Image (tube, rainbow, N blue to C red; front, side, top):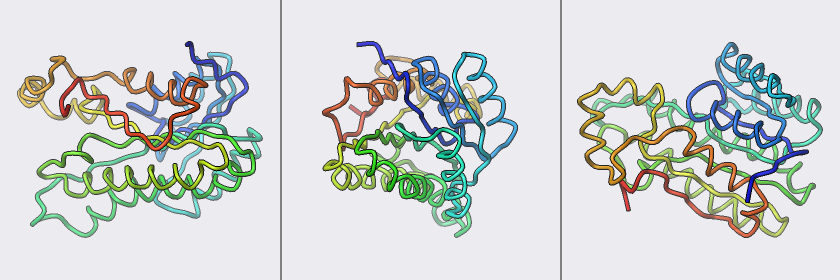
Length: 248
């Protein structure tokens, strides 16, 4: 079944680069109008311009998702600009890697506040609208690290594992109003983050992946389109692991 999101509005956080940028573009190509949220103004504007070039409505919003006041103000503006939000993709995420014994409170808080609290802020800010609509799709981008952990990423793993618990709780809470909430757990995807790993480390990673390659942002965007489509009407509270078989 081809995804047709004509007449729908999607809000994507972390839309300025990487997975978020590809997801925002894919949603637009499927017919959705898109609110592009990023902490970097130039990135958000560029993505919005690319989407408008596809013939869809798009606006950019510069937001630090860790700050509730900024999120609340942005959601109020988005609802004025678009009239509704049908699909929320909580994708914004950062890393501040380091061994636990040397990890500062600041590095812990920055990651948890962006990756986990950011999703809470946007979901809460939109909850009244979604519940009143009695429809909507919430898609949280977590990580396989939230399922299996990773040395040097205690903060990142905790934030992504927390996002899985958050997903399941919201799925139960919002289900009576016809709203679904699911999570996607990417493995190692070709983005700016993985480019910084270096060729030798990437080679070692690929050896652990049964499909023998890193994923592409399009692999994640395809799952988002499915979960946003009518084909996923009866799916909620699930975690879709897209990792080439790495943690099967």
